[in-house]
Length: 593
Image (cartoon, rainbow, N blue to C red; front, side, top):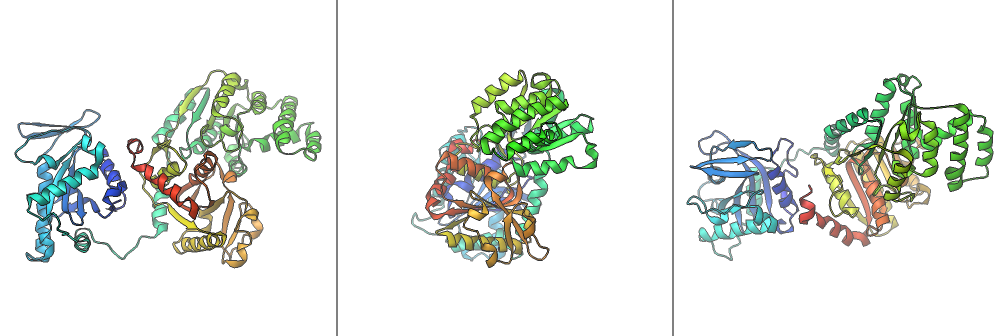
């Protein structure tokens, strides 16, 4: 895979064609020793006082090659080139793409001679150029261009690197270079790269990059605004979307709009930690008592305790547990309590619907909601494909239950991943076993996913200590980090770690470990953290990724990270991880990005 400089394309890059070429060059194993400079600015190009080259390839034993990329349809009439984008907008080019690439090539050659002198070895490096047309098939016979200097849609479908290697070989042959010549050497390439786009010793900390990603991610997208409008205009809505598409953000925003409009609102979820966050929402003065929010069973229990059936529930809680308590006792007594109190809400909003849509729960909600589920106002959010990790019901059964209990409702789909950076979103989907990304991936590249392999428990313990200390050194605060595992802390390899470290590792919510003098890093299970998110997530104890159950859990865990994801993996899964990451090179995967 090529070394891209910069490692991600700038947000000002609007060309989809350039972005596609960037991703292909970045991920193609055949470009492993190449250096690729994207959007190289020139002090001068031709007669212009400044210019830009889309891509400059620095290839050991190959040379320096300037690429001009033109997306959309292309046309040349009486020497005038035009391009037409997907919206039908046509733009006239001042020069042909080949002239643009050639001018850039000559300007670099001139700059190298001016800097190093006519006799310097760098001036003997072969230079060449080509034009890439990713969206069309282009077969031209033109005096101004060699056929192999044209790379079109067919070339990219087969292999862009293969087409570029053809350009390199043909140009070297045209310049009379010996086939076995190793010029330019890797050292020459590095020297040239330092001249064209030098590295600096001033390093941007991970904290700075993380803050940049956070600022960009914490905004509602246009897709989310559309869903807010859809919910406003329809009485009953079901929104489905994979992890990271903003379901919880939308649920909370809808609840806020609902109580501000004077409606008595119930906002419920399945997960305990998320429920505790939602409860905080309901405690703000502006809710004026109109918002009830939290974990479904906790909200229902409060109603029961206020009713004449409270003592009966408390007696049963001492003798019942698990599935019987939550699957039978709470719903049964809850229906009686709601009926006896006559309590109703005007609007029902449910997050994590994949874990709550069951017959007994829908029966309770049908009583709780004014006009019932058939005619009342509700909005449900869920991921019915890969986040139903508590083993309740399968997706088709969920939809059938809804159809039976709720009658007609509007369906909406959330597709844009707006929680995770591009690197996190893509590699989450890869390791979770998807054959193509389940969502549209955003444009914020962010930090690379950081993988660490361990061979035994002691190595993993040492890894965690080293990684946490490094995060602190980078300026990241303890409360911005969460450590996730398949296991609770008391059952994990990290039990007793606090006696060996200068920070405290503890379950979320365990306040006695917190101290103003000693950093406290939260630890919890992936199951418990579902529905939540954090700037930095460290996932531990990954020892299998080939089974659907493991992939679903990894999907939930990895997608909790907004800006930085660190994963500890057993050395035995290295091959599976490598195979998963390599899927990003497949045509089916690339065309969805």
